[in-house]
Length: 184
Image (tube, rainbow, N blue to C red; front, side):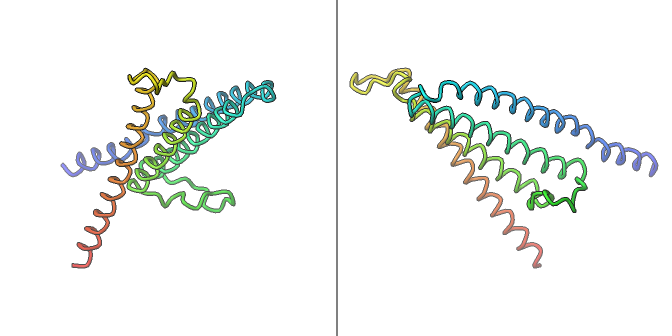
């Protein structure tokens, strides 16, 4: 019976490697994002002198948005792989990020929601910069499609912020509970 139990535990432990293709897929996703980043950048270049200031800001915010998503993917890949699959053996590499190997699942959740809030903020900023093009009619007294889109974006951003604060608060409470139990 002990052999069966050990074999079952070994199978479950080694099943963590089933996550590796997911992380590899995320690496390829960064490459796809890089292609779209290049496409947006080179699409903007020829028109830079004829674009309005708000159009330039919108184009740059789009590039910043893609950069934040790529950074978020790196955090997820490194932290997820190290937390759930295997340690990444590059400890002596000069370019190894300081946080690598130190972000646990709780820290990953907080970094994830913070990145999502930052991405949402960029999207909201893009909407505010582009507010004249989304059909907002303040004088009519009725809600237009643009008004509703903007209201939804603000509402979703607010929900993301509240969620982030609640995640951080839950983690702080959990840490306090752990240290309280370890003192006994």
